[in-house]
Each structure stands twice: as structure tokens, then as C-alpha cells.
Length: 156
Image 1 (tube, helix red, strand yellow):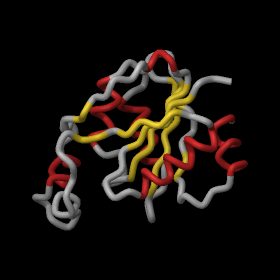
Image 2 (tube, one colour; image 1 turned 45 degrees about the horizontal axis):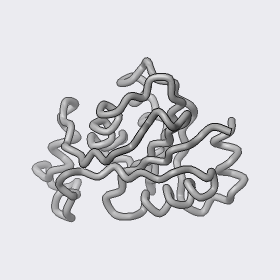
Image 3 (cartoon, one colour; image 1 turned 90 degrees about the horizontal axis):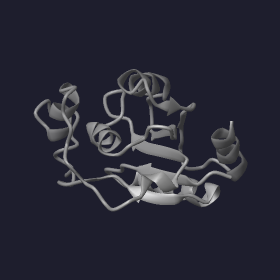
């Protein structure tokens, strides 16, 4: 069985709890994608067109700084990347992470948490932005999935 790294970005804690559950089920290691500057409630106010998250998401080139922790990505065959959906796609801080490590030759499986948005638009955006990576089918998770559902998704 391949070694799995479950990475995640979580602004409110929802994605973190889902990522922890997934990591436990797949016996994977856990890695938090941490922005250098944490997001405040004001930063996350999507109704405010001048909020930090709104400005980042409007700019395709935005790459918020992250805290790069020491991780030997070569030890992993499969990388899961979890995040909340912002403006229909992955938060720009996820792009920073993807571009900060070498994912060539890895199997990458995205997952998201969202109350309303589905995964397909977001997944297509990732595949278009990073066409040379080996993407597997992503999934929107709610945190109430059972062990078999998670294992079947990862292994297919």
C-alpha cells in the first residue's frame, strides 16, 4: 500500500476535522497548509469586496505566503489536498502550497468542504492550472462519511 499524506487548509476548522478523519481512516500522515498570516473573520467576509479573501480570489496570480514546514514529500506516493471552496475554487493559499513542493509523479486527490458548492468546477480549475499532475477524482466531504465510503473513494 502506498504511503499517503493528507494535507489541508482550514480557515474555520471544518476542513481540519474532515482531514483528521480522512487521515485516520487511510492511515495517512497529516499536514496543515498554514498561511503565514492567519485569516480573521473580517478577512473571510465574502460580502466585503475589499476583504482579504475577496481580493485574493479576484487575482489569479495571488499566492498568499505559507509557513513551509519540513516535510519530505518523496516519502509519499499519494497526496490528498483538502480545502474549503472559496468563490467556486480552491483558496489561493492552496495554489501557494502546490507550487511550493514537487508533486511530479505523485497521485493527487483533492477534497473539499462546502455547504453548497460541488467539487466539479473546482476540480476542473485545479486540473487546468496544473495539467501535468496525476489527478484522481476529488470528492466533497461533509465529515459524516463512513470508513468504507472514504476507502472506496481513495482506492478507485
